[in-house]
Length: 369
Image (cartoon, rainbow, N blue to C red; front, side, top):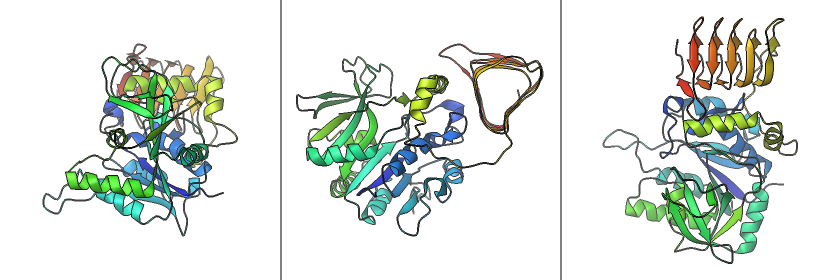
């Protein structure tokens, strides 16, 4: 059943930077859980909820994002009508630079759709939930907009979006990066709003010269509009720093969380890549609690780690508590612990990289160590 709503995904978040990991890509294109990107979860949630028109607002570093999404075929969005829309930034005709005011490009996308509601989502979290129930709850509440929240606070380090509710479940206060939050309720970064009201807000932003279209910019109108809040009951993994990305990745190794994220009823779709199955060579050593994707070759000891497609672990290597992106090569005798290595990187023979819990070592893309 097609839902009377269009999707709008914010691929960038200027408030979130993961250092070397987001230097070549938007946060939406961050690899996650062995073979996925963060945007796969948001796109799949929308498609599984009956949303057939999805726009992706990409401001910078969106080459890898475009390569990954393509025409939208993995999500059944390669359609004659509706489908997947890429919303790039406009170029300022005077400075010839990308214009920071991305509201106009969003207006153009929203105006051409005929759906009554818009589901707006950021890409700094991972979850698997049904938006259809949220849309129905929004319609029944007759609120101006509905925000999703999760009781995972207080979040003491930025970025954070703390909300407080009144007795009827409506937002009465909204705080951004508040230093000493008392509320356990934190906005997830997903809003349901009517198409007409969104166009009104976007037009006001343009008139007032407000540069950034974001979840924060919308929720700051909580005094003007009735904002209904709904609690997310499914598991939520927030990604707002290198440490939180590493922590979220390690949680995927927990079978209970993994089964809830990758539900049979609500599958997560991604771009297919055909490679040979993972190989564990005889005499490789201990291979325990490892999420290894197609094309991997393991000849050493690997434990509590995630290996993306095409990773090679040399003989005598010892890899623990680490995340290795696509086509990473670990030479013989290497020792890794609490390390994140970006794609196409090589760690030479007998190298040692030892991070700490909460402070993983990050190796950038295409590096030779």
